[in-house]
Image 1 (cartoon, rainbow, N blue to C red):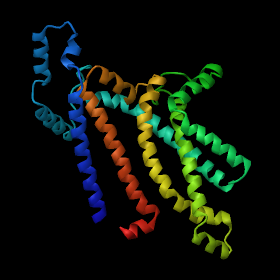
Image 2 (tube, helix red, strand yellow; image 1 turned 180 degrees about the horizontal axis):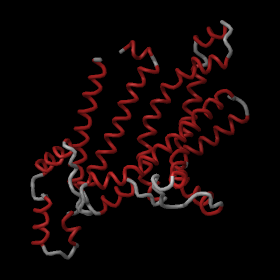
Image 3 (cartoon, helix red, strand yellow; image 1 turned 90 degrees about the vertical axis):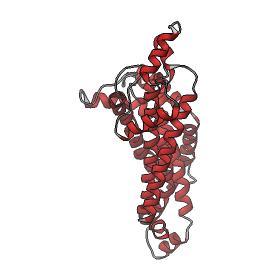
Image 4 (cartoon, rainbow, N blue to C red; image 1 turned 90 degrees about the horizontal axis):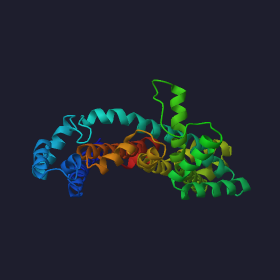
Length: 314
């Protein structure tokens, strides 16, 4: 319980520090939002008046307190560019990015874990060598390049999937799945390769441990040892990597959403930065940061569930 409270306190303090960094870093960016909204030829008096209306004439620390107080109350402010509540804009965009992340992570787990086990069991065979080369390529090539290749092959040449845009889940479930599949796969390919390599190396290391030799002496079949003992111990480092992969998936969606013209957070973030829409940008970056920190917090808790040794040590 004490360890849980410590991690929870650390989680809250980290979010507070992140909010400080996010706010004051954006204050250092060049460009006046009021001038960008009115145009470069706007009258200085008009710019000054708009700054007062937007609250940009207040000192940074007062603006931070107003912003963070509103965030704690569920009020993220109003977008300078769209003139709408930030929470309403994010509510329209979050489902797109969330769907992209969920499908990408599902592909990573469903493909990465079985192939990692397969390569570990086939260690030294030509098939394992071939898959190792493929995983190395998957790690080396960036996701946006995979996106272009997938568009060319499955969208243009074969015509199996749409090359841009998306269909809402409420309109057509399978249409939405088709529109999200290629961008999700583009993000997942590199992550699948990482999971395969980490799981394969961890399984081979665990196979050399004393408890495996003891189990074999007792007459247990290698398949039973693998799935009953080795695999569970091998999931600890893989779980750590999955926490990083989830963060990378959110970051990768910023580029992939622009490649496939998906109206998600990534596409909105780039547009908002270019227009200096600080309330919207700050809220999006804070949302992404909190999501990543929450995932890492959950991963820490799962450590103790998967491995009793960590729980007893704690």
